Image (cartoon, rainbow over all chains, first blue to last red; front, side):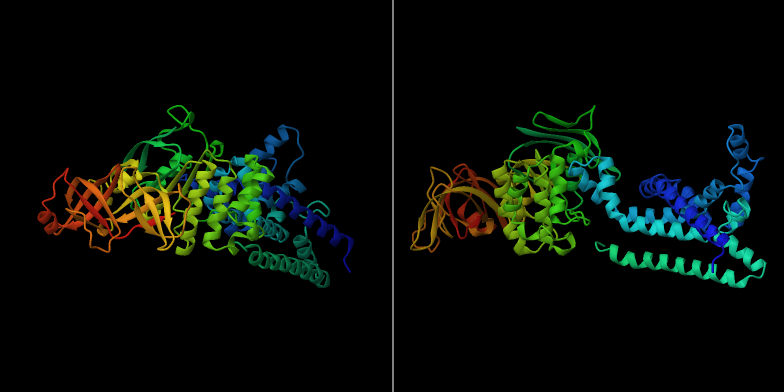
Length: 225
Length: 354
C-alpha cells in the first residue's frame, strides 16, 4: 500500500523528529531551568523569543533561516569558509530549522514544571548535604519526570507535522529532505488522493496517539500534586 | 560551648541587627510574633539565606567576613514548617536520601526508625501521611544527617493538638539522649515552656534578646510576664511518692519545703519541669494552716510591677527559683508589699511538664 518513497519519507520524518527532540531536551533543559529560576528583569525578552515560533508563520521562519544559512548568509559564508558542507537543502539544515521551530513546545512545559517544583525541595535537599548537581539529578529530574515526558512528546509530535520550514529550507529531495508532510503535498498536487489519504490518516493517528499519551500520563504522573 | 550568631538581617527597608551568644547544648527556642525575624534568623544560620554576619558553633565557623560555607557543607539538620518530604520518594527513600549523603550506617538508620516509630510507614508516600507523621519522618531524616546542630522552624504549626502533646516530650528526650543542640522556632509560649532551656525573644523592630527560659518568662520588664496568662517555670526533682493520695513529692531547692503534685509515680531523682500560672499564686503574710491549698512556700519579694489598673505582678524568690504572682492592686496595698519582704506563696495549682 505504501510506495517505497512513502516509506523513505516516513523514516526520514521519524529520524528528524527523534533527533530534534533529543537536541531540544539537551538544549532546552538548561534554558528552561534558567527561565524558571532567573530573577533577571530582562528575562521576558528571552521568553518572548522562545515563544516566537508558536505564532510566526513557518514560512517566515524558514525564509530567514534560508537567508542566514544560504551561501550569501553570514552563517553560510562562515560555514563555507570553514570548509563544511552547506546547510541548506540538507538533513542537518532541517534539524536546525526543526530545533528552532519546536523550541517552545519543549522549553515551556519544562519551565512550568521547574517553576511548579519550587524552591523548597531544593532547600530541603541542600540541608541533607546534596550539592547543586546532586540536587538537580536526584530531586529535580525525578520530580520533573512528567514534564520531561510531556516536553519530549510535544516536541516530537510538533516536528512530525513540520511543513513550511522544511519547504523553505530543504525543498523536496527524496531521502534527504522530503518529509511526510511534503510528500503528502506532492501527492495532492499530482492528484494521488489515495496515497495522500494513507499518509495523512497515518500522521493524524500518530499525532493523536501521542497527544493521548501526553494528557493521559499527565493525570497519572502527577500523583504528588 | 557556645553558638555565636551575629547577623544583619535585611528585612524589607530596614536591617535587624542580631548579636547572640547561645549555649551550644540543650534546646533554644526562638519565640516572638510573626514577622519579627525568627524564621529569617534560622534560615541565615543554616545558610539558606545570606546576610552579612558571622555564625560559629564552638570551633566550627560557618560564616565570617571571609567565608560563607554553603548549606550542603554545613553539618546541620533542618525541619521546615511544612513540605519537608520529597514527593517522589517513599518514607524509606526519604530517610535513605539523608543517610547516603551523611554516611549513616544501616544500624543508625534502624535506630532512628525505632526511636520515631516509623516501621509501619516506611513504604508510604508523603501524600499518604498525616501532618504529624510527615513531621516525624522529617525529624528522623534530619537526625540521619548526623547534625552538629538541629534547626526546626515551627514544625507543629500544621498538626493536631494530640500529636503535639505526644511529640514535644519525645523530641525533648531525643535531643537530650543524642546530645544534639536544637534551635526551635515557635510562637507558642506553652511549647517553649515545655521544651526550651534558653529563650531568644524576638520583638518588633528591636534586636532579639536571650536568656535562660525561667528568667525570661519572669522578667517583669519583658512582655511575657505582663500577659494575662503569665507563668513561671520551675525545675524540680522527684523525692518521693505518696501512693495513698497519688501525689508526687518534689523539691525545687534544697533549702525549701516540698511541693506536692498529682500525677503518676516517677522514680526519685527524676528531674521534672513545673509550670505555675501567676494567677494561681496568692500571697499571705503568715503561713495558713486551715486551707485546702497544699503547696505553701516561704518566698521573698524581688520586684513589683503594675500590670493594669487593677492588677499587680509580683516577682518572688523561692530560693534560687523565680515565681510570679498576679494579685490585685488593692491586695498589694492591703499587704503593704515591698521589695525584700518575706511572706508565703500559696500555689493553687502546679502543672507537670514532661
